[in-house]
Image (cartoon, rainbow, N blue to C red; front, side, top):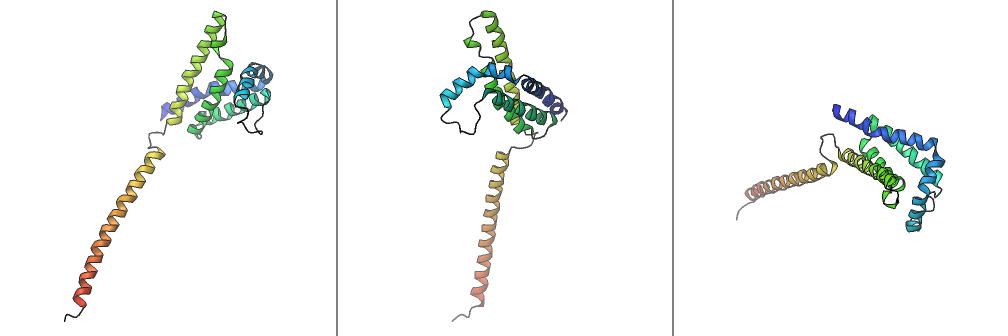
Length: 180
């Protein structure tokens, strides 16, 4: 559908450009994200595996790579539902780290960050739609339910046919037996 071919690249643009910008200025992004990351690791650090890097610059680069890769996948229509899910997973921490307007005292800056926060919330809504978009085809869950129903129906028909066949064979066997 033409709508998907236009909407997906438009939705992906902010992530690809944002990812490129983050790679170009990883230090600056890491400095902005560091308070959020430190707070997050303090709260859930014992649950996070050791293999997960804790260095803000590395995490910013990983996030940027996800944004670029998933953004390009979404824009080109390659695994768009997965790509949208990855972008959504990247958007939430980015929004919390960069646009925590509730911590800002200056009214002007607070309003700017609030606008950015709600812009990102709107983009998250678009990503949720992209995650759930099945191209007008039934979802995997729907297909599984109906396949199970079809198997049950077929099994029931086979059982009834088998019972009829068994009755016929029993009648033949009874006729073939000598009577005394």
